[in-house]
Length: 205
Image (tube, rainbow, N blue to C red):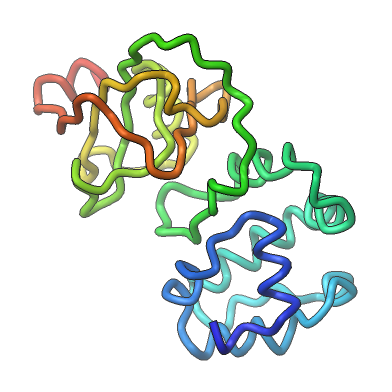
């Protein structure tokens, strides 16, 4: 965190990006470029995008450059929490990258729970396990297929999970076409499993 200037610390807090993870995600040289290039909100008026300092930084800069208006809007009024969801579900974030993380504790709960049990599905990242799974889930198989298609990911290389969970653990709705539900930061599920080869074939026939 010491290599991140005060403006960036505040900016990433406002737009809901997990700075603790970001400092592990970016190399020292990538962080130095970021901190010297973006020192105030006015620096977003310049050309800050670069693909010369590493792929991880390029992914972040591309995301920021594609959402300049959203960044300006929530910077001026941090109470516009709905913008955080727009950033989280951005089409420019690919499932092919181990992208920066969002701090979901900054998001508002807009889902209204009824106490029912849900069965949800997730295409995990390489190396993800039932002991440590992410927060974005699909309500049905078609949502999973749409996510895989939109992200152009190789499903065969990824684990696929199913969980049973009380809907009180849902934070908000995500991408409609992906039937996405976003779960709370430290959600608790009643059951979690890795899908078998046969179950995977039912989804991706």
